Length: 276
DNA sequence: CGGCCAACCTGTGCGC
DNA sequence: TGCGCACAGGTTGGCC
Image (cartoon, rainbow, N blue to C red):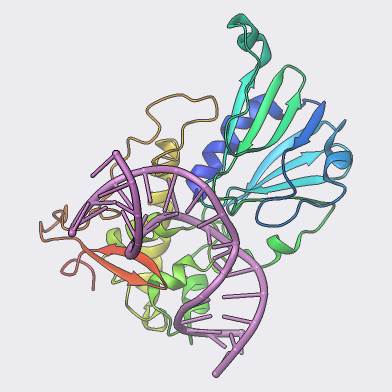
């Protein structure tokens, strides 16, 4: 999925079209995504005003003025697109449904469409508490993330560093791409046992986590090959990674081949000589 | 609880 | 050109 920077970018892109707007209609084109839609989804959202958008971990939260909050997760392949009816009618067309447009939110003359080919996404509603947000760890840009926190969480965890950083209950929002990049900048092996991290290495990880995510957000959540901005602007995925998806290409630091390995069923890209 | 891994889906790209 | 297989941003839930 979309990792934290992509969800942050989507949130920032959607906010100007959503905040303060009333949901005039919610259309569900199927029974659910990864899970069935809740029975009261449509009636809870329709007619409400979206007061604020928020990102928490990789979740998007649409806060409504009727005490409900709509929770959305993009899974691996989910995306939102925004269309404006006034612009569309100029071209003599209304917003058209394409394959995998599962949910359509109408906000007056603005249409927000959720598309998700693989349907690993989630759409749900809650009032003051959602189970999926319970086990979410600290936000990377919050004060909660610091060397001592990572150090404490990693004690007794013999799991590889790669898996440890992907654990959403430790640090929220990291995914396969950015974990590879963070480990490269930190010169740490993805296979190193989490339990072996020194406090100093935890400090390095903290700093590089923020660096990698900041740059990605600045670049507009660039990691997705097939994601455009919510209104379809270009230049969105022209990002260059140091190691991710660069098997057999030269390490930017030492020029030796980037290695691709498998951890927890997922690809890890790293430099054998730079990362210890 | 920790660790491992199958499962949930569709699309794409590659080798033959 | 077509077929089959491997693989893709994530997370849950079941098993040991």
